[in-house]
Image (cartoon, rainbow, N blue to C red):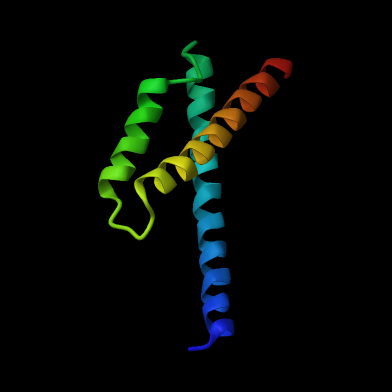
Length: 93
């Protein structure tokens, strides 16, 4: 395979990642609404730490532990931001 073949595989993989991230965000929105209904805090540091540690434990490479940590900290941060935004928007309705 040449470089263009590898790039095509990366492009296809990026689309799959985007689809999975979109699902994760949709689930986060549903959780945010449930948390709001139950007056629970959006931020759950223990849960977020557990998610990252579980993923690090499951990582078989080639991502480094630090790479997994950095990537998923950003994913979790964005999901939390969207959860908060969803709760704020439902307050306005």
